[in-house]
Length: 582
Image (cartoon, rainbow, N blue to C red; front, side, top):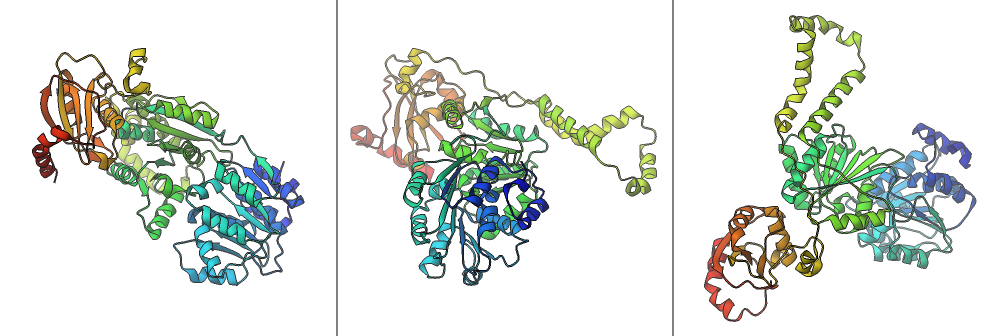
């Protein structure tokens, strides 16, 4: 099928052809003819990057009445970036339609130009919910003549807390409108909007509900927490043509990873919530141009980010919610192109991969972190490929060839070849020639006895229950407490990650506001102390104070309760700890 067969007018077909589009995507092939022939509400279940803007934008442009200077179509998008992108696309599709007026309404920009566009009778308005609600409250936005109301990325708008704004906008819009709702997933709040504000909607689903895009290759890599940054560099280095986004859970992680990559010679920018709008637009402008080729971002900062031709999405941290993994991955593999979604998974996150697989409806393959030889080979083959494919401009280089020949005089073919390869290759040989294997050994099979520890939780560390270690216990105090939102599972995991072992037996754990006490079996005390001291935990360097050895191991305690005599006896020591901490 081609666009010529969908019933579009010549002005739209000419604009489509100018953008190089020939074959409609599945959602375009189904949505466009339906909207041209029917006046009904529609729910569209489709992933990011499947061509939704053209699917609803082209038929809307064909059916609005340009002779009436009234807002007839409203498109709501979750972020200013997506709002701007959708508005640009609508303008491009309608550039051959004489008299068409569009407006882009979003926060962080001056009200004046936006108010003028609305009062000037923009036919199609693309807006973020917050700014449009402000203009409705001021009596400036008029939705009484609306024929089409589009909710683009509805699930993300609700995730970002726009429920009240959406309700107000939907209630203000003309009752005669058609509502088009597009979402990658269908959580309960999106279903509520469809039920309350739509009439007998026709459902169009491309793929399966809540499933991943078939053009994305999903892989995960097990790695010790302390090796995650080194593993990230290897995933980048083994893909010389990478153009992608690295997702981190927190803005501090984003800033840290971007800074470390910059110091190590990589072209990378950071995108997080502390950037001003001017800084954000500057970062996005550079990234869309492909320089830098890597963007390090939080989920919140990257919401609505619309960039074509991404080759990779890398999950440096797995997201807290499974649906977010799907949104991240949908940023690559778009418009029929292939892409890769790669996750770095520390040793206790295997169960989270299984949950993501269930939502995706497909298996996420486990792969090995590339070794030095594999990286060097990939870089070499990339260099050779660039040389064999380069186009030679004989006229341009002719004036320089004699000087080049003179410089190379006396070198045989083999010498020139070796030197040519070494120009770019030496750095990788130096770094990866004897690089260690970052792949951890296979996890031991869990036994019934293992499951007794920590209530049988998968991957849980072991604290003392029953049997006493022959050498007693040693208490350590570390500078993590309730202020850092740690609980016994996090502290057990910290010990396991720092020491790279699951065989250390722990006793009592007492958690207070700014510090915690952990009992460790005496035979492993030295290893634990050395491993924890200076260990990086979520950007904090661990400090360790070693206490006396005890013969009585106890089960852990959440701490923070009545300390009784034990607390009173340790008051002096606590004051000393806080004084040193300050």
